[in-house]
Every structure is written in structure tokens, then in C-alpha cells.
Image 1 (tube, rainbow, N blue to C red):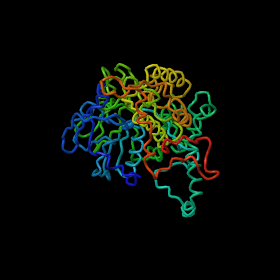
Image 2 (image 1 turned 90 degrees about the horizontal axis):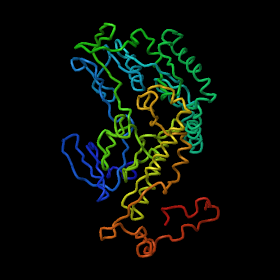
Image 3 (image 1 turned 60 degrees about the vertical axis):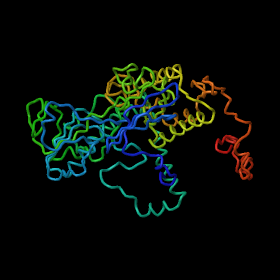
Length: 471
């Protein structure tokens, strides 16, 4: 798709952003960037609009256990995997049992001589995110020849896609405290885990949390429960005390020597950007942190922030909900942002920014909504920035279907505008974009000035005259 639409000509790879600062007088974002290969710094580049699309866990870091720098073996964060590392026949320690730790541990157990799995937290392991899918496995699950042949029929393939993706949108009630799904899910999940553990009750009790399922993001973890029952894996919940040159010592005094350590802990969960984004006296990289001015990621609809003009986020704070799919949620947000950009560029607007009142109202809605959900049940998750009981900011306050409906129309009344200068330094007339009273299409003899005239049955009266691209 990127090649088809020539997207790469707009991309600058191997480049990181060091800072972004809003210049109110110019109405521009001023960026400082750096080439990660050469170290060359580029300062003072100006842009009309800034969109961050850097994802949730964009700033991994190694844990800070005492002595970790003294360790002489191979050590990596799973987000910074070394493709030249061969774990076959080695003694490997894995730290962490979040999503990455579970996946890495499962794969390493199958090839390493021994795995010491340090798993401090209890967690629910699901069978699948989607009840319409077969239970996930940690091996390839190919389509049958008959299915592949059937997919050659566009209609049948579309039917398959809609059945599969549509089911992701129909399980939001599992998030609500008082739903029937919530009332039955604990025992259902526990029984599933018991089965996959081969009936090992002692191990089951070490894993089952005291908070309900859906308090934090579920982890399907195909093969994980089976892996931790294997004789070449030690499941260790005793806290780590320190590292040595040859391995890891826990607080009970036990030292375990290993050839390699893979850390799956230490990702940022506060959603603060990894570089300064400044507007006036505020800096989102500082003020979205718990100790900052806001103390949490303060946004309007998870798309923008009051006080930060011409700035938008894709999959930032309050991103698409637990239900639905990530690609659909990102597409909905990008479509919303495209509407902002069309208004900005097409109506002579220098800057637009959500009002503080609009941001505060969205925050009040979130604070009223989330206590109804299992996410508020005092567990540590990236929904609450790793702080049990803290304000939830890591997910949209509602279902993905509801989010799509809300973001379908922009509430223009929630924004404040500054119009482009009229040439004398003063703010221009808001209707200056009317121009000379004509459109560019009128000057093109080949253009279609009556796109609304179509064959019988081709017009849909629900969106007649709505297409911005037709005028």
C-alpha cells in the first residue's frame, strides 16, 4: 500500500526526534531531529501540524537491579533483541511475565537447556482474544486447502473477514463489573488455566491473581502454561536481590548461574512522549508523568490536548477501546485528524486547539465511566500507568463501536481558532478563504461540476452533497 500510493517519498527513516516546540507567533512546530546512524542534528525545521504515532511502549529500559552492569553474560531487553543470539543449549533467565515475557519464555523453553523464569506478578492467561477463533497455539495454524480455495471467491473471503473481525466488537460487556460475563469469567479462566497446567494445583494458585479478569490486558499466551510445567523451566516468584558476574541472586540467598538474561520489564506505561513536546510553559514529556503538572496524560478525546495547538495523537492516551481491532481504531483516528487538517488548510486557519473546558469535560466523563469497569479493580496495568487505583488513561472510555460513532463527526464547537494574518500583522478575516468568489474546478474545462448527477440508484441520499473530494 505504501508503495502503491508513493508514501515513502514523504518518509525520513533512521531519524529520531529530540524535541518539538510550538512557536505561537509563527503558528509552527519547530523540530530538532537527529540521524541515528551519523549523529547529525537538524535544528529549526518548521511544520504546520504535528502528529505523534509512536505507540504505547515506545521507551523500553533495562531494570535497575544492583549489580546488573557487572553481569558478564549476554543480556538484552526483549524489545532490543539481538538476532545473532542463539539460545540453543544455553542456560537462560527471563525476567517478567507480561505479554512479551510470556511469549519469549515460551519460545526459549523449547530450545534452551534450562530457563529460569522470574515472574513476580500473578496474571490471567486467556485462551484467545476472540471467541470466534480457535484457541491460539504457539505453532503455525495454517488454513486448509479447502479454505484457501474458498478464499478465491471475493464474496466468501469478505464473509470470513467480517465474521472474524466483527466478533471482536461484541465482547465489551466483559469489561463491566456487573455483567454476566464478569460474574462467570473468573471460574472459566481458572478452569482453562488448570487444564493447560495439566491439573497442577500448586502452580495454578501461584498464578491466579486476586483481581478479576479484564482488570488488566488479557494475555492469550499460547504454549506458556504448558511451558512452565516442563522440567527444564524453573518458575521463580522470589524477588531478585542482585546480579553477579555469572547470574542472579534472589532475596532468599539462592544464586542461579546463567549464560544469558532476557529482560521483559521496564517499558514506559505513563504515555508521556520520550522527547520534549513544549507549548508555553508546559512539556508533555514532563507534565504527563505522575509528578508533572497534569500528573496523567490529559487529552481531549485521546486525540489532542488543550494548550497544544496543531498537535494530534494516533494510538496515544485513551486509544481505541478493549473491543474492536487496533487497525480499525487507528483508521478512525487518522480519519478524524484528516478532517482537522482539511479545515486548517482549507479555511485559512493558522491554528486550532481544543478548549480547556472541552478537555475537562472529557476527563470528567472518563472519571465517571471507568469506575464501572473491572479496570478500576486495584491492579497494576498500563491502563492506569502501573499505579493501582490511579486514573485510567490507557484506553478509550467505551467500546470501539462507540468510539467510531463519537469520532465520526468533529465537534467543531469544542475548538478554539486563530486565523491567518491579513498581511498587516493582525488576525485575518475568517472568511478570507472565500477567495475571488470562484472555485478552481470552474477554470478546468474537463472538470465535473455536477458530480451529484448519477445513474438511477447510484445516489445515496444519506450522503448526497457530503463528499468533500467532489467540490
